[in-house]
Length: 263
Image (cartoon, rainbow, N blue to C red; front, side, top):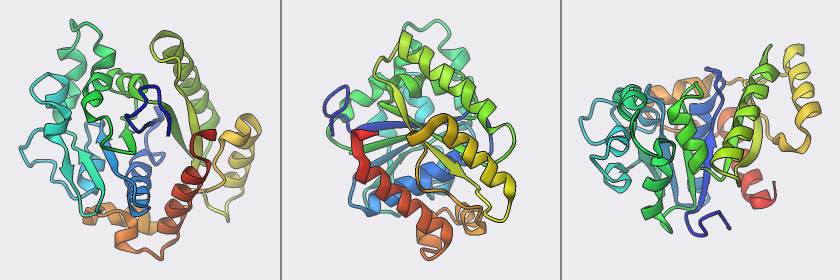
């Protein structure tokens, strides 16, 4: 699995500046699915809301070191990583303090590359690193894009989906031109798809029309089990493995593993 640094594993930013499109749900459940496929996985919770942290069973008020400590230079990334209930799946937890990162790093040289530098000592440890980005295009998302090999974009099947996609793809182009020439779109994931709703089908057709084979074949359905599982601090496949939500993310993991670096 070749990457720009050769042995860091595959670093994938899960990003969309729109909120409520399934970024965290995807980070948690894709990570768990890949871990169940015997891959060593790290989730970096780069969203100050900390939903990937709590969704993987880590208390957000545990008072341990978090990603914030990495950004301000108080800890190495390896010091903040915690294990989860899923074997082979670890998480670098978030903190509400991440809201202050943009201000605290205002005078720091190369502040867009803090995460990339923090990841380098972990070379060889993880096969996939998934970065759950906040719903914005600020410094935390920029750090994820500079560190990443690729971007996975969840898109909710609703009005204005393409509008948000256009802004994100322009941002990816800017980051590629200025900081990370190897950055690419890993894939576009249709989420919250309701097969009974004609709008869902229309949005899916439009996204596929514009982005072609960059759209995953797997579609994530609107599924109540996906909404319930985070309240129990577990990925959906540990909450209800037979649910449509669990099966869809397991299928997505298979698709990603099958296609590998060819997307």
